[in-house]
Amino acid sequence: MKYDYTSVKNIYIVCGKNDMRKGIDGLATLVQDVYELDPYEDTIFLFSGRSKDRYKCLYFDGDGFALLYKRLDAGKLQWPKDENEVRLLSQKELRWLLEGLSIQQPKAIPPSLKGSF
Image 1 (spheres, helix red, strand yellow):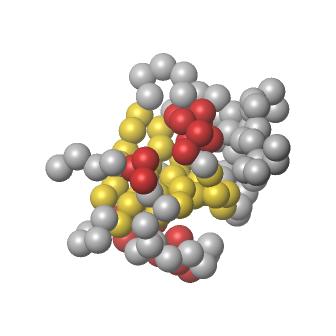
Image 2 (cartoon, one colour):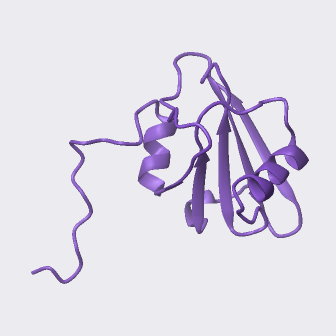
């Protein structure tokens, strides 16, 4: 089955170092108990460990959890270091992160305000 994550309601990145030995149950419990978020919503949760060359993506698709694990062959992710913080990402910030860029691009053109003309 192929998933289309571009229409997911929320994308959260769990900042800092995470225990990459955790599986679905451990990550879902972390999301619920530590960050007080609902892992059963239409939401992607991203986790990375110390080495920043791999990440996990947790997603509930309606009838079960999917866990994606990716290890990069070259390069590292620009993962935010703020321990014990969860950030809401846009699709653009997710793309930047997974392309090895920082999620904060100060020279990026900000989205235009609707009706500002």
